[in-house]
Image (tube, rainbow, N blue to C red; front, top):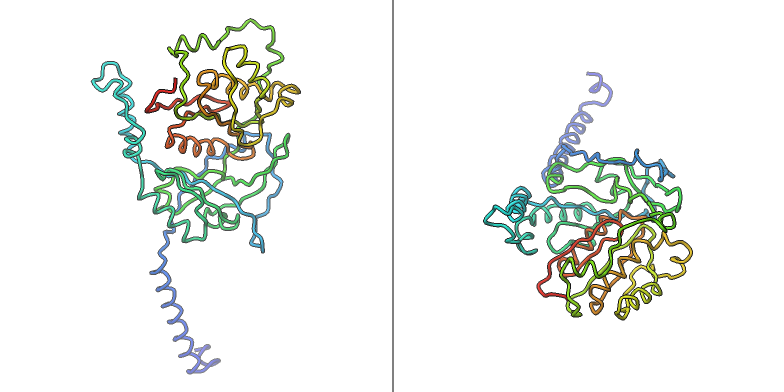
Length: 350
């Protein structure tokens, strides 16, 4: 009655029409863009265990004329992982009739591919204004770029800047994030969100000099793996390095001369070939130098690439992308600083 008295019957009718119109608009919008309110939380951050990165900014990144961009990597859930595990057990068990009947890379890809899930995630990202930069051939990784503010909204989180205490490298990360339930069912994780680069732990080479250690020589490796001395030239081989590692071209020449082969030319991607760095601090070259020397000694005529990725990125996700591409190209890969991944080739290298 108070409203009628103040605004009159005409205004009351106008308000009812306006309210009905707004309700209709909301109903139509909801029908065109259905949104699931349920979200799945990804809370796997280990940042609280690290003292080598400190928070520089704590305020939420906002929209601006030139918003800061950030690239994420969506890792798509693969199918039939339980079947893949069973296959692995069968071909690894000497008592199994399937023993050593290995699957090809193509067979494994066909088994675990989640093409439909990849398409759902890509469509969702593009519909929300993100730029899809790359999708790996089998769709397991989606590289996407968008402003920080867009990611803060889509992942329902807050990004901030972290700085490394020793190198002063900076990167943007968040504590946790979430995805709509219908998208999360296809996403294993999103890289470059909560993850940090591996902690730098340089080996104490100078302190080990003179110590009594067993020697792994080129002759020992060739004998153990039954590698003959015929030089192959098929395929290609690569080394993936990070953690501030360099290799020395002059050391490679000396190693090659001592072991009876000609040092090949190395394709240096990342600018980490430096004799000076290795002379000033051998710890900067411990792993990478050995990688280059031994991989070229085993197959000196095979084209070799030295890839370096800066530590400021979550380098093992970059490595996943790189090894995925290398597998498609039947390329051998050595992962500097951790372990060697050996891929079977259709043709013998040496």
